[in-house]
Length: 260
Figure 1 (cartoon, rainbow, N blue to C red):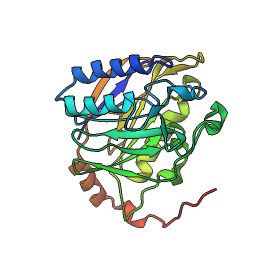
Figure 2 (cartoon, one colour):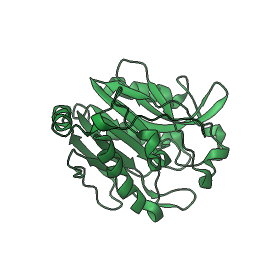
Figure 3 (cartoon, rainbow, N blue to C red):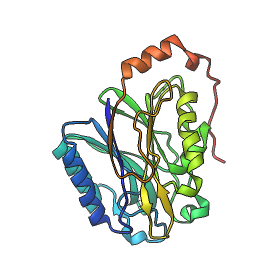
Figure 4 (cartoon, helix red, strand yellow):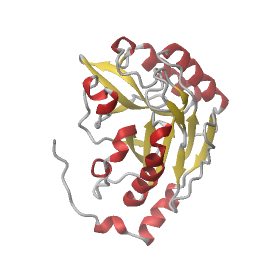
């Protein structure tokens, strides 16, 4: 599974510009990757006080553009954006697939300190996507801090954890630790894509997007503040062999997630 990590700066509160930027980046890698991953709230940046910027799910400009890009460039697109659906606002993680209906996961853990919990409705489903025979679990930024929410269920395992984020530089040390920790405890690949630059609230972002293989090596290799695309090849066959050699998942404790 070839995954493109797109680390770049987001135009604050400007969906049209951000859709154009994504189209340029996808055109440049057409035919080179199966999946492209973009940062959290890639159409607007992490602005949690402008409901008018929310996309109408499936019928809005952003949804239509994402499906068109997926179809045109023959690539699945994973990220998150602000949407309105059935009268509620969500920070919605998504996968738009070529010639197929999109799937979504609404961010469950809303970042209260950033005003997110007062703005969005949380998701309650621990959704696993499947694309080209690979099972993918999606997390959105703050979700990464909650290991129980992302814990493998040995009856319904996933192969790749993808986390999309707007994770600021001041707390990047936690991102650097938590992403590989989730890979280690869940016996999976982990891919995390963060933005770079300065947002409309003057928060600084230095990126640190990463892709961890079965030995917890970061095979993406972004530099601080680097804008660019890295394409990594994650072997699902190698992962499954690794799980056979070290079958830690078989000893996993049973658990249940309940509403807090």
